[in-house]
Image (tube, rainbow, N blue to C red; front, side, top):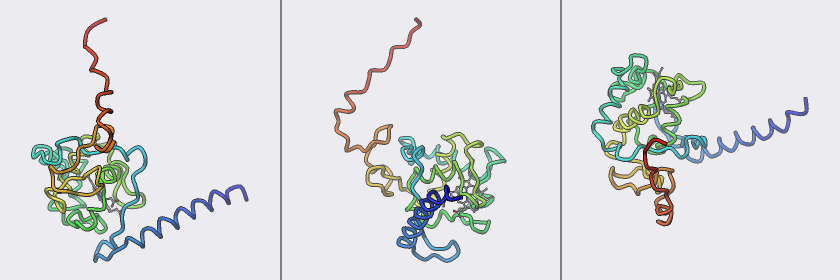
Amino acid sequence: MTRIVRVRGTTMALMLGLVGLGSTLAGCEAGEGPIVAPPPPPAEYADKHMPAGWWNDEKIIEEGRQIFIGAKNIDVNCASCHGKDGKPVKAGARDFRNAERMKLYSDSVWLWRISEGVPNTKMKAWKSKLPEEDRWKVMAYERTFGLKGKEWDVVKKEWVPAGTAAKADEAGAPAATPASKKTAAPAPSTPGKS
Ligand code: HEC
């Protein structure tokens, strides 16, 4: 019996830490409960970011809208809970019009939640129904409800006017990385049969 005590202790300490962090950042918002920053994304999502140019791409945003309203795949209908115009129709569904809350979500956190869902809520994991690029598209649309015309700046770690975010390379490394890193990239291999 005693063997799990330590594990429990650690888990409890972690949980208390999170609760503490939550209440420090908590604000007040009718309907959805206090505004609390989401937890950081797990490692496998932390370095994933919106594909370059997509925040501003009207075609991508429209494709995202089609996914959101269930027009692309009837089994994926975000609007059935989050509402066609972003006004939630199911109790507890996240209100993306609430910029004060949504600006606390990085693109990585957002993708993580769409991919894996939120445990013990109606928000389920969508990764089996939506390939990653479709998850980015639907997010590009969702953010228009409260963060229209904004994009996530990977370096500053905040939402900024679309088109003004500092460029980050594919690996998600900050643009502040010395330029020498670029020159070290291997030349693309020449296609050809061996
Ligand atoms: C069956 C209802 C339902 C459907 C369908 C649904 N959601 Fe949700 N969603 C919820 C609820 C409820 C929450 C709030 C979860 C919570 O309390 O953190 C939520 C939260 C979210 C969040 C925020 C997560 C967080 O940590 O606050 C995102 C992003 C999201 N949904 C995106 C989507 C997308 C994209 C789709 C469609 C692919 C979708 N949802 C479909 C019910 C739904």
